[in-house]
Length: 310
Image (cartoon, rainbow, N blue to C red; front, side):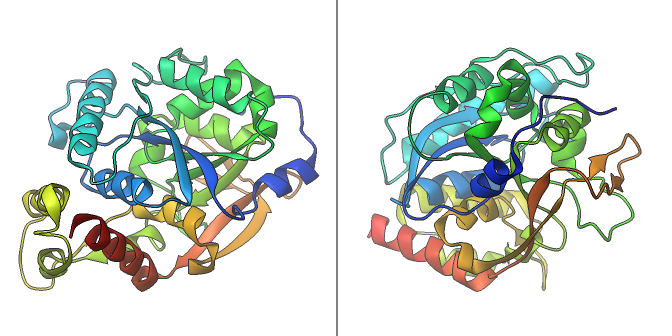
């Protein structure tokens, strides 16, 4: 199933796909309770003056391993976790924290799901600002897809940097973020919005770290450092050689320094219901991240954490 919206000029999309040149305005859309990496991403963004964080909003999810009852419950737990992280942040955030969609677009058969998060994306995107508004989509794409359907004109004003999917050479993509709401993911890929895809396996999984590195570089660096370390230790079973990707650092890091990444632009594929990419040469362009510099990204995170907590 594909979503058809009025086309937008390809030159506009290509312009919006460019990384920022200097400071940029950002909305963070995050399923913070799902794992332990969103918390790192939020703190990294707040410690980075290159990003003006306008809103942080909760994305829904459902995962038995995180003791959620349903998609809405995952959103509420993520909302609460955002507040906990902000309370410990060494950089204070005075902007709004918003709740996201309470059900999926898969459940609504492709209809947008009203929420304060989706409405916020629309309202902020439609402001006269003279610059691109970047939406860091770190979870299911329900809030983003709903906003696009509510007001398609935002496609000419935003760039969505989404974590999800597998590399094109994979046989399929049983990716957590996309399959949480496949209809939303399909809508975003079909919509023509400027989309930067950061895949999990093969790209953001390069951001793997170990308990020993967390002990050395994170634990003891303020309340937030101790909290992040405890999250990591509680989530990751410890044994020799074990690491854990901090996946969600990647989208924000692309905004900080595109030189840490290798990317290409290609026609956006169709995401079919069998979880496969269907390439169509005539489709609108999108950017795909191929590789990232793990050392540079962690060095930036650690340096900022140390500087803000010593």
